[in-house]
Image (cartoon, rainbow, N blue to C red; front, side, top):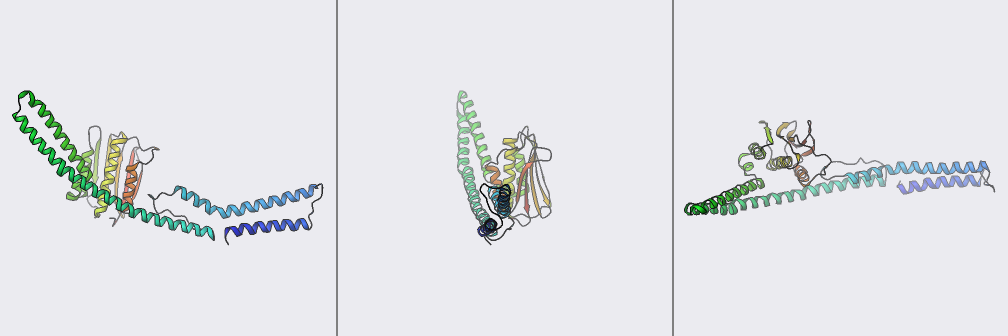
Length: 313
């Protein structure tokens, strides 16, 4: 029976009963007698209690649905409400669960297209930086060297300094191009790409260790790219925000899949809201059906954990 009619009929029963009592054995005098006032107060209390019980029982599923609506996060999929209640309430919860299914599917599809376009754009920019800007700066370096070799002594030192500045800019452009599109991932595979990544982030004051199991199951190209990008973003956050002295990257086999763990001994995430980098990691994890968690490590600091199921990507 719909919720409206249940509430209406209960109110009707209570009111009919109260009317019958007033027309029958119960009467109201003027002035009101104490016994009559007690009977009326008792009847009113009974009506209020009956209404409260029915509304509490009938509306509890709606309250759970309201809480679920305010806390649902499409980056943490799979959470559904249990369908209980009857009639319209059960239909509403079922419709909400079906809506979440559609939204998660549409978000996964749109995220896949967006990230695919992003990777394609990164490849294009990296190629242009390497092929066009890099070649131009290389030509400038050669010309500067030629001029420095022929220049007078008082000009030569200045040209040498400009030459070193240009060489530094060329190295930085090549570094940016590698970060935009890790060629080592395509050429040498995930294991060596992760090792090169830890070497890249290691610097004075920050020791970065890595450990990669040798018996890892085969991952698809999409899964390998997700692992690399999550590791890259995790180490980037360590360098930028954690003030850590040590960081560790581990890729190991676990039951039914592979686990990536990036851990540091820094100040931790605290109550800071998740930024674009972390949201990007979550979206990438969804593309291959992986689970990403971020929180405090066992010894403090921050730990990013990505669990990739078998046959992902």
